[in-house]
Image (cartoon, rainbow, N blue to C red):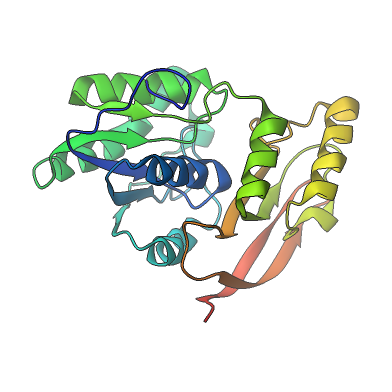
Length: 247
C-alpha cells in the first residue's frame, strides 16, 4: 500500500478512485490528482441495503460529484447484500467485495490498470480486504489517509477548501441538528468534545456519521442540495429531494 508518507505509488498505468462522494474517498482522489497520479475513472458501488464494506447513504450523488471533478464514473449495482442477516462478518465482507473486484477486472481489459485509491483511515476490516483484492489483481493501493491523525486530516481537508456536509448520524451526542450541517472548525471543536464525552470519532470512522463533499479544489462546480430530514429519536439522515451543479 502506498500513501503520502511511505513509498511511491505505481505510475505505469491508470488509477481508479474507489468513490462514494464522502469526504474520505474524495480526499484520496484529490490527493492522488494533486500528486499527479493518472486517475482515469471513479467507481461507485450502490448497496441496495446495509453494508459492511461500503458507504450507503445517497450514493447516487456520486454521479454529480464525478461530473464536477471531470472523471467518468463506473457504477456498480449489486444485489442486496443482506448484511443485517450476516452471521460471519469476515465472510460477509469478502462477499460484498466481489462486485467491486469484478468491475475492476472488467476495467482492466480497457485500461492499463495500475492501482486504486481508497479513503481508508483506521478500518483494518475494510482495508485488509481491499489490499488483498489489489494483490489478486496485481495493482497498487493508494491510501493517503491510512493511520493519519483524525484531527490533522480534518484540518487539512478544510484548509484545502473541502465543503463537507453531514448526511447521516448514528451516535450518542449527535442530534438532529447535525443533519445537513457543514463541517467547519466550530463543528470540529464540537466533535472533539463529543469524542471526549462519548467516544465519537472526529472523522466518523466508526459509523458515527456519514458525509458528502459538495465542493473542493478538485471540483469545477459546487453541488447544491435540497433535502428533508428523518429522525427516529436516536439517529437520522437526510433524504435529498434535489441535487444540481451550481454555475
